[in-house]
Length: 439
Ligand code: SF4
Ligand code: SF4
Image (tube, rainbow, N blue to C red):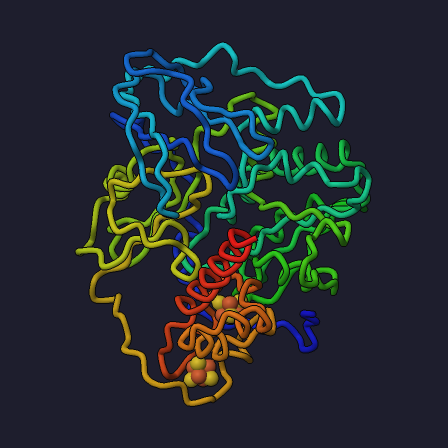
């Protein structure tokens, strides 16, 4: 059983929070958006429109009845010009609705502030908003707000760490959308009957800390945390704020804790007040390949290319473009990729700043173990993967790895440890599937 016998570790990384003081600016309506039907953990939505249809801003264009799903809405008004195959970053093929914008941004009549007067109507409203975890996880928010046992949650933890280098979108949301944030916190507390809220924030966000502290109450507290990656990891944050450990096989809810990302809550407050579902994202566009780094409000489905053009274009040829931050983000290879719900940043690094080090043999220095925030043994995963040793991967608990990259960051032998961890999980999954198939 994972015990966290030592303090949680993590690493110091260069923050590159150069956009922290740059207010969020809205980009003009693009000519076209491409909206995939999978933008969350859970089931794929089915298109509710067809080629040639005229759609309005905020109109629901995709949904499904699966209990883990979230509806998808049009981010521009215009004409559906295509419904085509789309391959997600997880290599799943789905449909994507292509809308040619008419530039009018005519709002759908369904866009009305929701009537919320009970727990049930609150959950229904959150589902209709299309909200999923905006910090990167993409878990449907209404499902998160439905604990297995009603009344078992007592504490809302607002994850405002934003520990990934470059990204400052959450920081800006705290400064610019604080009214919406606090409205959402109070609403969640009211309908889930919570005792307290703790806003966990890294100490490198002095202005946001000061601003939020002005609004603290007896039941809503701001708690600062050391500036150390990956402070925003769910288990790391819970431990840092409460001293409680989410043990193997447990969820935060088993400790009476609900964790929500700060931008997700700010959006939720905005939706409850305006009724406009999730059709925009505030995101950071930064990195050495971006000419004018900014925090930008963009319509969902706009291409990375269009967003980067709005930021002055490329300063130099990009070597890598990340959906999210450089530590846990996903390399999208191609800037025709659309902005998705859980996409909080586009980070493009210049070719000269990107290099793939050559691996050398492990020297048993143990730095990866000391850096791992979850007390795992990455060097042992690496060896087990090389041997194809599924039993060892299982007993070493490779599945607990959150792929934060701390181990690879500190490894003097440049071992591809995150890649090995992913491979280890894949080997375990395949072995489990084979076992199930054999029964
Ligand atoms: S990537 Fe996994 S094994 Fe490596 S430090 Fe992070 S949690 Fe630990
Ligand atoms: S940090 Fe690298 S070299 Fe050191 S033990 Fe871990 S894998 Fe081996």
